[in-house]
Every structure is written in C-alpha cells, then in structure tokens.
Length: 365
Ligand SMILES: [Zn+2]
Image 1 (tube, helix red, strand yellow):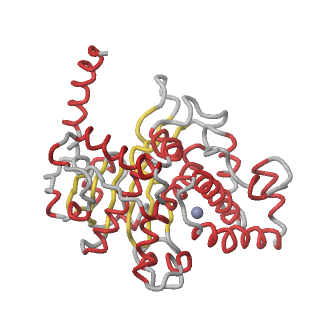
Image 2 (spheres, protein in one colour):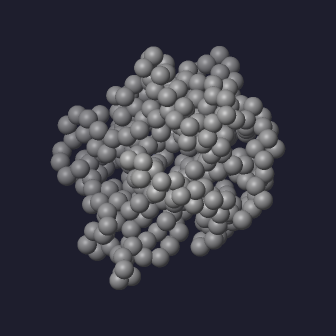
C-alpha cells in the first residue's frame, strides 16, 4: 500500500505542474471575487487540494443523509482547483489550437470572455458583474452536486465520455468521439434556457494502424444569461413561478442548472456515442427529419428527469413544467403529424406502450 503511494505521488506532481498548460499569465482568483461567493464551510487555506476535495464530498454526503434538497444545499467549490484565466478569447487556449473558433463554428464563443478553469470544465461569462460571477459560482456548485450526489450521471455522461465509448467503432464508421473538456457558457445564444454544441476537434488516431480517427471534442453547454433572470415569460419564470424575478433566478441556479447540465450532456452523448453504439446512432441518423428534434427532446428530457426524480432531491417544479409543456405537447404534435409511431419504431424497434417508461434510454437506469 505504501509503495503505491510513493509511485502515485510523483505522478500526481507531474499532473499538477502540467496544469498551467495554457501558457497564459494566470490571474489571481481575487481579481475576480468568486472566493467571496464561496460558502465558508472549509478553511481552505489550511488544506491541500485533495484534502479540500474530500471535505467537499463529505459536506455533500452529510447533506444528502440529512435529506437536504438540492435547492437548499450549501456547496463550496475547491479554491485550489479553480483558476480564473482572465478576459480572453477562447482561441488563446491550447484546447482550441487544432480547430480555432470562428463565427461559423461557434459564434457564441468567438469573442473575449471571462474564463474560469475547473478541472475538465471551463466556465465563461460575457460580463464580470455580480450576476455573472454568481452564474459562475452556481455552475461550480452544480458541478460538485453532480459529482457527489448524482454520481452515475456524472460518471456516465461527463467523466467516462473523456474516453471513447468503445475501442473500435461500429461497422461503417471510421472514427470515435471523446470529450476533452466541458465548456459551460453563460450567453444569449439559446432559445429558452440551455443548448448544446459539440465542438469537433480531430486529434490523431484511436488505433496504432491509423485507420480510426479520434476526435477530442469540447462539449459546449450554453445557458441563457437573460432568460434565467426570471422576469421574462420564457426561461426560469414559467418553471418556478415565484413572486419576484430574483427568486426565479436563484431557484433556477440552485436546482434547474444541475438538471440543465445533464440534459445538455445527454444531447451531447448522442453525438458522442453514435459511431460506436448502434442504439445511439438510431437517434443520431434521424436528426434533420421533420420535427424529429421534438422526438429527441422527449427522449432526453425523460431520460434526465426520470433519473433525477428517482434519485430524489428535486422539488416538483421542473417535472411539473416540462412534462405537460414539452413532453406531452411534443407527443401530441408528432401524433397529429402522423410521425410519432414511425419515429418510435425507428428508434426503439417496438410499439409504444407506456410512454414515460419507454420513451427514454437506459443509460441512467
Ligand atoms: Zn433538449
């Protein structure tokens, strides 16, 4: 056991020293007062990064055991993991060096942004005001809640997707996808609350014979910084229906955002997995067909929500909004257009029976 520790320690040091691989003068965190937003539950200055991480995990587990809802959890981020990279264009980061951002490829990131790095996550805001800093803090909070409370979802959709879904693709495909980073961007790109974009980065081969292309993509999750403010009839207000815009905003950031990240990462998973897992290619290859986006939306929504509500910790607000307003409405319109049964048969290869039980993927079961 001890021997293993000695071997692991140098490896770990190497990893840490490689961390500032971005060749940027790293700004101090206090340039950007995120520390002030961090719940003061751990005296972080006295502990190492790993010790802090273990304490965050313990804090979260204790709150789960005490039945604390996600919306009421107090969750610190690890100040030694967080790096504020400054007000920079994402193309200055080495992760985009093999496929630079342009207006055609990702207009929402083709500008200078306030960028934070937290492990494999990047978080960006367009401004640096209090609201933007709170958005960044709540994204960190959501990441830690997913990591330690909704571990299956975090592992399957985020952690494991850093590697290919299989070592070789399905017959007829010559490439595999993986993610090298998740980018959570607060901006005005999405139409309601959130959207995702798979940013493709071809990065060598998955095999020694150089026959299988390997992509190491960036999964971009856009969160609408305007619609979550809680005063519009789209975004956080119709879900939370609170008395004030501020309450809608905070309720979304504390709870809805956790679900949004997994929802968008599941759309992303369909892209990620399609060349190696046939059940995902069944969805992927139908994209672009008439109203198929509504069918995919129902699969994603129902896969995510049935997981979260089975695990517990959520108020009813999200499911009470999305099942009638999106899921049932999409089923109705697909049926009216005589598309529902055809799409169902093509994706699931059976007849629909119980929609809530059948219209989903089993990855989070
Ligand atoms: Zn969606």
